Image (cartoon, rainbow, N blue to C red; front, top):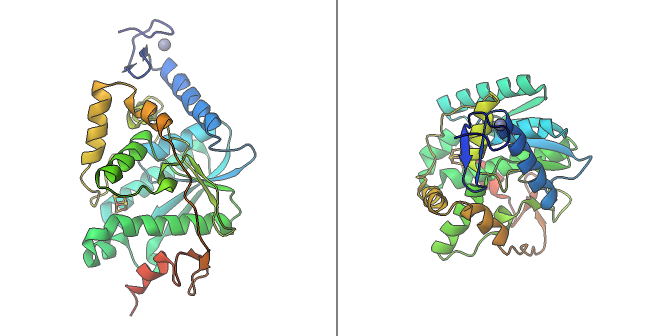
Length: 288
Ligand code: SF4
Ligand code: ZN
């Protein structure tokens, strides 16, 4: 198979676009894809100070590398969740990434807030990922606000969004619109805008980019990751119907959630849905 652009040996056939590309033409194509998507959905705005949350995985590493290519003003944030080998490998990758891109890295450790995700796992097995999500969102938001960033960018991919949507619909759960939006404007001054620059980009496209460009990432997966069955369903449909995920996401009619009255946590003062925020409730389980 030959590159459609230059005729050299192709490294990938992108069926969703009906195009094969070589290792030189692919990164250009990919960067243009991300750039177009950021513009189409207004995911990031000019002159914004971006805090890029990186996990050490391929998707957020690819995001950081593209933000650099596109000239954004950003720093990296890595949260050490305290998940033994996984956290150690991830931190190593993120430090290499920061060095390669020459972008500042901020490291925050969950244990400094009184617990780790491994503690949470031992205490509350079923809720590991939802508790972890609460902790990450809390720390990202607070750090971004206290350090004057305009937006927090995360590496969610098109498969993350589509599998989340399908799983919830299949379970009869009313979807939580925020997770499906490429950019969430804050509903309160204590909340920092959140953005997903890779909203339309697939995991395979990210993987090809980090491999071709030698961008540091760790292939080690979190040992607590739930079974990827919904993702596999999405991969399966994409295999049979190339372009499905991207078309699906474009066709999603997304309505922004309506937010009621805003409360502030009586313990830490962050935005809460009740008297105490979800993160402080989590912390209280580890006190005493
Ligand atoms: Fe946290 Fe779950 Fe992701 Fe592991 S898989 S990092 S526990 S959200
Ligand atoms: Zn080429």
